[in-house]
Image (cartoon, rainbow, N blue to C red; front, side):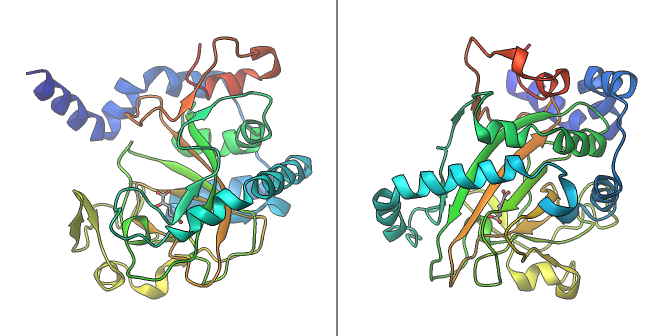
Length: 304
Ligand SMILES: O=C(O)CCC(=O)C(=O)O
Protein backbone atom coordinates (compact mmCIF):
# COMPACT_ATOMS: atom_id res chain seq x y z
CA UNK A 1 0.00 0.00 0.00
CA UNK A 2 2.76 2.43 1.04
CA UNK A 3 4.68 1.50 -2.10
CA UNK A 4 1.57 2.17 -4.22
CA UNK A 5 1.17 5.62 -2.66
CA UNK A 6 4.84 6.32 -3.29
CA UNK A 7 4.47 5.26 -6.92
CA UNK A 8 1.44 7.53 -7.40
CA UNK A 9 3.32 10.46 -5.84
CA UNK A 10 6.30 9.75 -8.10
CA UNK A 11 4.00 9.72 -11.14
CA UNK A 12 2.50 13.10 -10.16
CA UNK A 13 5.94 14.53 -9.73
CA UNK A 14 6.68 13.86 -13.41
CA UNK A 15 3.98 16.36 -14.24
CA UNK A 16 5.56 19.80 -14.64
CA UNK A 17 2.70 21.65 -12.92
CA UNK A 18 2.57 19.38 -9.84
CA UNK A 19 6.33 19.22 -9.68
CA UNK A 20 6.69 22.99 -9.61
CA UNK A 21 3.56 24.23 -7.84
CA UNK A 22 2.88 21.20 -5.66
CA UNK A 23 6.12 19.55 -4.64
CA UNK A 24 8.31 22.65 -5.08
CA UNK A 25 5.86 25.45 -4.33
CA UNK A 26 7.85 27.26 -1.64
CA UNK A 27 11.24 27.29 -3.38
CA UNK A 28 9.56 28.44 -6.62
CA UNK A 29 7.66 31.31 -5.02
CA UNK A 30 10.51 32.25 -2.71
CA UNK A 31 12.87 32.50 -5.69
CA UNK A 32 10.51 34.65 -7.73
CA UNK A 33 9.66 37.01 -4.87
CA UNK A 34 12.91 37.32 -2.98
CA UNK A 35 15.88 36.59 -5.19
CA UNK A 36 16.03 38.95 -8.16
CA UNK A 37 19.21 38.24 -10.10
CA UNK A 38 21.28 40.41 -12.35
CA UNK A 39 23.20 38.22 -14.73
CA UNK A 40 26.25 39.13 -16.68
CA UNK A 41 26.00 38.39 -20.40
CA UNK A 42 28.01 35.14 -20.19
CA UNK A 43 25.92 33.67 -17.38
CA UNK A 44 22.77 34.67 -19.22
CA UNK A 45 24.05 32.85 -22.31
CA UNK A 46 24.66 29.72 -20.21
CA UNK A 47 21.04 29.71 -19.02
CA UNK A 48 19.80 30.37 -22.54
CA UNK A 49 21.83 27.45 -23.95
CA UNK A 50 20.76 25.17 -21.11
CA UNK A 51 17.11 25.98 -21.70
CA UNK A 52 17.41 25.36 -25.43
CA UNK A 53 19.85 22.43 -25.64
CA UNK A 54 20.21 21.03 -22.10
CA UNK A 55 23.94 21.76 -22.22
CA UNK A 56 26.14 24.86 -22.09
CA UNK A 57 29.91 24.91 -22.45
CA UNK A 58 31.82 27.84 -21.02
CA UNK A 59 34.99 28.44 -19.00
CA UNK A 60 36.39 29.92 -15.84
CA UNK A 61 37.71 32.85 -17.89
CA UNK A 62 34.32 33.62 -19.41
CA UNK A 63 32.19 33.08 -16.36
CA UNK A 64 34.02 34.06 -13.20
CA UNK A 65 35.50 37.50 -12.57
CA UNK A 66 37.28 36.27 -9.45
CA UNK A 67 39.85 33.63 -10.44
CA UNK A 68 41.07 33.03 -6.88
CA UNK A 69 38.66 30.18 -6.02
CA UNK A 70 39.82 28.27 -9.13
CA UNK A 71 43.48 28.74 -8.21
CA UNK A 72 42.74 27.51 -4.68
CA UNK A 73 40.82 24.53 -6.01
CA UNK A 74 43.65 23.55 -8.34
CA UNK A 75 46.21 23.77 -5.60
CA UNK A 76 44.05 21.72 -3.16
CA UNK A 77 43.59 19.01 -5.80
CA UNK A 78 47.29 18.95 -6.64
CA UNK A 79 48.16 18.44 -2.96
CA UNK A 80 45.55 15.72 -2.64
CA UNK A 81 46.91 13.87 -5.67
CA UNK A 82 50.49 14.16 -4.42
CA UNK A 83 49.66 12.90 -0.94
CA UNK A 84 47.67 9.94 -2.31
CA UNK A 85 49.91 9.02 -5.22
CA UNK A 86 50.61 5.40 -4.13
CA UNK A 87 47.01 4.68 -3.15
CA UNK A 88 45.72 6.02 -6.48
CA UNK A 89 48.30 3.99 -8.41
CA UNK A 90 46.88 0.88 -6.70
CA UNK A 91 43.30 1.85 -7.55
CA UNK A 92 44.31 2.50 -11.16
CA UNK A 93 45.44 -1.12 -11.46
CA UNK A 94 41.83 -2.25 -10.93
CA UNK A 95 40.22 0.51 -13.01
CA UNK A 96 39.54 -1.77 -15.96
CA UNK A 97 37.70 -4.42 -13.91
CA UNK A 98 34.58 -4.89 -16.02
CA UNK A 99 33.28 -7.62 -13.68
CA UNK A 100 32.53 -4.96 -11.05
CA UNK A 101 29.62 -3.31 -12.91
CA UNK A 102 27.94 -0.77 -10.63
CA UNK A 103 31.19 0.26 -8.97
CA UNK A 104 32.50 2.48 -11.77
CA UNK A 105 36.00 1.23 -11.10
CA UNK A 106 37.35 3.56 -13.82
CA UNK A 107 36.26 6.63 -11.84
CA UNK A 108 37.57 7.64 -8.41
CA UNK A 109 35.68 10.14 -6.27
CA UNK A 110 38.61 11.80 -4.58
CA UNK A 111 36.53 13.30 -1.75
CA UNK A 112 34.90 9.91 -1.07
CA UNK A 113 31.47 8.72 -2.17
CA UNK A 114 29.81 10.72 0.62
CA UNK A 115 31.13 14.11 1.67
CA UNK A 116 31.13 15.79 5.09
CA UNK A 117 30.11 19.34 4.29
CA UNK A 118 32.58 21.92 5.51
CA UNK A 119 31.57 25.49 4.73
CA UNK A 120 35.21 26.58 4.91
CA UNK A 121 36.55 23.96 2.51
CA UNK A 122 37.74 25.08 -0.86
CA UNK A 123 35.46 22.50 -2.53
CA UNK A 124 32.28 23.70 -0.79
CA UNK A 125 33.14 27.33 -1.40
CA UNK A 126 33.81 26.62 -5.05
CA UNK A 127 30.49 24.80 -5.59
CA UNK A 128 28.52 27.48 -3.76
CA UNK A 129 29.76 30.42 -5.81
CA UNK A 130 27.06 32.99 -6.44
CA UNK A 131 27.33 32.68 -10.24
CA UNK A 132 26.73 28.92 -10.16
CA UNK A 133 23.77 29.27 -7.79
CA UNK A 134 22.29 32.01 -9.96
CA UNK A 135 22.56 29.83 -13.06
CA UNK A 136 21.08 26.78 -11.32
CA UNK A 137 18.23 28.77 -9.74
CA UNK A 138 17.40 30.46 -13.04
CA UNK A 139 17.43 27.18 -14.96
CA UNK A 140 15.04 25.57 -12.48
CA UNK A 141 13.06 28.75 -11.80
CA UNK A 142 13.33 28.05 -8.08
CA UNK A 143 15.83 27.87 -5.23
CA UNK A 144 17.69 24.63 -5.91
CA UNK A 145 19.64 22.32 -3.62
CA UNK A 146 23.30 21.44 -3.97
CA UNK A 147 23.29 17.63 -3.75
CA UNK A 148 27.00 16.95 -3.98
CA UNK A 149 30.37 18.18 -5.06
CA UNK A 150 33.43 16.08 -5.67
CA UNK A 151 36.64 15.73 -7.64
CA UNK A 152 36.75 12.86 -10.10
CA UNK A 153 39.77 11.18 -11.51
CA UNK A 154 38.76 9.00 -14.46
CA UNK A 155 41.40 6.45 -15.36
CA UNK A 156 42.19 5.51 -18.94
CA UNK A 157 41.17 1.89 -19.49
CA UNK A 158 40.73 -0.58 -22.31
CA UNK A 159 37.69 -2.79 -22.90
CA UNK A 160 34.12 -2.25 -24.00
CA UNK A 161 32.31 0.90 -22.85
CA UNK A 162 30.21 0.26 -19.73
CA UNK A 163 28.15 2.05 -17.08
CA UNK A 164 28.21 5.84 -17.56
CA UNK A 165 30.50 5.43 -20.58
CA UNK A 166 27.32 4.38 -22.41
CA UNK A 167 24.35 6.67 -23.17
CA UNK A 168 21.86 7.00 -20.33
CA UNK A 169 19.86 9.60 -18.44
CA UNK A 170 19.70 10.30 -14.70
CA UNK A 171 16.47 9.90 -12.77
CA UNK A 172 16.69 11.82 -9.52
CA UNK A 173 14.47 14.68 -10.65
CA UNK A 174 12.68 16.30 -13.61
CA UNK A 175 15.69 18.54 -14.14
CA UNK A 176 19.16 17.68 -12.88
CA UNK A 177 21.90 20.22 -13.32
CA UNK A 178 25.47 18.97 -13.22
CA UNK A 179 28.56 21.08 -13.48
CA UNK A 180 31.82 19.59 -14.75
CA UNK A 181 34.97 21.69 -14.54
CA UNK A 182 38.05 20.24 -16.21
CA UNK A 183 41.19 20.48 -14.12
CA UNK A 184 43.34 19.17 -17.00
CA UNK A 185 42.91 19.51 -20.77
CA UNK A 186 40.43 16.88 -22.01
CA UNK A 187 40.79 15.63 -25.56
CA UNK A 188 39.00 12.77 -27.27
CA UNK A 189 41.26 10.21 -25.55
CA UNK A 190 40.52 11.48 -22.05
CA UNK A 191 36.81 10.56 -22.13
CA UNK A 192 35.00 13.87 -22.64
CA UNK A 193 31.50 14.33 -21.28
CA UNK A 194 29.16 13.99 -24.28
CA UNK A 195 25.54 15.09 -24.62
CA UNK A 196 22.64 14.58 -27.01
CA UNK A 197 21.18 18.11 -27.21
CA UNK A 198 17.47 18.78 -26.75
CA UNK A 199 16.81 15.43 -25.08
CA UNK A 200 16.19 17.24 -21.77
CA UNK A 201 12.65 17.97 -20.60
CA UNK A 202 12.62 21.49 -22.09
CA UNK A 203 13.97 20.26 -25.45
CA UNK A 204 12.29 19.24 -28.69
CA UNK A 205 13.58 15.65 -28.45
CA UNK A 206 12.31 15.05 -24.92
CA UNK A 207 10.73 11.62 -24.55
CA UNK A 208 12.48 10.05 -27.55
CA UNK A 209 13.93 6.81 -26.26
CA UNK A 210 16.70 5.08 -28.19
CA UNK A 211 16.91 1.31 -28.21
CA UNK A 212 18.78 0.07 -25.19
CA UNK A 213 20.09 -2.90 -23.22
CA UNK A 214 19.65 -3.29 -19.50
CA UNK A 215 22.81 -3.18 -17.43
CA UNK A 216 21.83 -3.98 -13.85
CA UNK A 217 18.37 -2.54 -14.47
CA UNK A 218 19.72 0.67 -15.97
CA UNK A 219 18.94 1.45 -19.61
CA UNK A 220 22.13 1.95 -21.59
CA UNK A 221 22.43 2.69 -25.29
CA UNK A 222 25.46 2.44 -27.53
CA UNK A 223 26.50 5.07 -30.09
CA UNK A 224 24.67 3.40 -32.92
CA UNK A 225 21.42 3.24 -30.95
CA UNK A 226 21.76 6.87 -29.84
CA UNK A 227 22.56 8.12 -33.32
CA UNK A 228 19.23 6.74 -34.56
CA UNK A 229 17.53 9.35 -32.33
CA UNK A 230 20.07 12.20 -32.40
CA UNK A 231 22.52 12.14 -35.33
CA UNK A 232 26.13 11.94 -34.24
CA UNK A 233 27.00 15.27 -35.85
CA UNK A 234 24.61 16.97 -33.40
CA UNK A 235 26.20 15.52 -30.26
CA UNK A 236 28.08 17.97 -28.08
CA UNK A 237 31.43 16.41 -27.30
CA UNK A 238 32.85 18.30 -24.36
CA UNK A 239 36.53 18.30 -25.21
CA UNK A 240 38.27 21.37 -23.83
CA UNK A 241 41.18 23.00 -22.09
CA UNK A 242 41.74 23.09 -18.37
CA UNK A 243 39.21 25.57 -16.99
CA UNK A 244 36.40 24.46 -19.32
CA UNK A 245 33.07 24.32 -17.52
CA UNK A 246 30.19 22.20 -18.77
CA UNK A 247 26.69 22.64 -17.38
CA UNK A 248 24.34 19.87 -18.41
CA UNK A 249 20.85 18.75 -17.52
CA UNK A 250 21.59 15.05 -17.11
CA UNK A 251 17.89 14.17 -17.28
CA UNK A 252 18.78 14.32 -20.99
CA UNK A 253 20.90 11.64 -22.67
CA UNK A 254 24.60 11.77 -21.97
CA UNK A 255 27.69 9.65 -21.48
CA UNK A 256 31.34 10.23 -20.61
CA UNK A 257 34.49 9.01 -18.98
CA UNK A 258 35.46 6.59 -21.73
CA UNK A 259 39.10 7.56 -21.25
CA UNK A 260 41.46 5.55 -23.43
CA UNK A 261 44.77 7.36 -23.66
CA UNK A 262 44.82 9.87 -20.83
CA UNK A 263 43.29 10.15 -17.35
CA UNK A 264 40.65 12.85 -16.83
CA UNK A 265 40.53 15.11 -13.79
CA UNK A 266 37.55 17.27 -12.99
CA UNK A 267 35.52 18.98 -10.29
CA UNK A 268 31.82 18.21 -10.35
CA UNK A 269 28.67 19.33 -8.54
CA UNK A 270 24.99 18.51 -8.83
CA UNK A 271 21.88 20.64 -8.24
CA UNK A 272 18.28 19.44 -8.13
CA UNK A 273 14.94 20.74 -6.94
CA UNK A 274 14.25 20.39 -3.20
CA UNK A 275 11.63 17.69 -3.95
CA UNK A 276 14.11 15.39 -5.68
CA UNK A 277 14.49 11.92 -4.19
CA UNK A 278 18.21 12.11 -4.78
CA UNK A 279 20.33 10.07 -2.39
CA UNK A 280 21.94 12.14 0.38
CA UNK A 281 25.60 12.41 -0.52
CA UNK A 282 26.38 15.55 1.47
CA UNK A 283 26.29 15.32 5.25
CA UNK A 284 26.03 18.38 7.44
CA UNK A 285 27.64 18.87 10.84
CA UNK A 286 25.47 20.12 13.75
CA UNK A 287 27.56 23.26 13.97
CA UNK A 288 27.52 24.70 10.46
CA UNK A 289 28.90 28.21 10.97
CA UNK A 290 26.04 29.73 8.91
CA UNK A 291 27.59 33.16 9.49
CA UNK A 292 30.11 32.35 6.83
CA UNK A 293 27.34 31.60 4.31
CA UNK A 294 25.03 33.95 2.45
CA UNK A 295 21.25 33.56 2.55
CA UNK A 296 21.31 32.20 -1.00
CA UNK A 297 23.96 29.61 -0.07
CA UNK A 298 22.01 28.48 3.00
CA UNK A 299 18.94 28.01 0.78
CA UNK A 300 21.02 25.72 -1.45
CA UNK A 301 21.86 23.36 1.42
CA UNK A 302 19.72 20.69 3.08
CA UNK A 303 19.75 22.57 6.40
CA UNK A 304 17.50 25.05 8.08
O1 LIG B 1 31.86 10.85 -16.54
C1 LIG B 1 31.13 11.44 -17.33
O2 LIG B 1 31.54 12.25 -18.15
C2 LIG B 1 29.66 11.14 -17.30
C3 LIG B 1 29.12 11.33 -15.95
C4 LIG B 1 27.68 10.97 -15.82
O3 LIG B 1 27.15 10.17 -16.54
C5 LIG B 1 26.91 11.61 -14.78
O4 LIG B 1 27.48 12.31 -13.92
O5 LIG B 1 25.67 11.43 -14.77
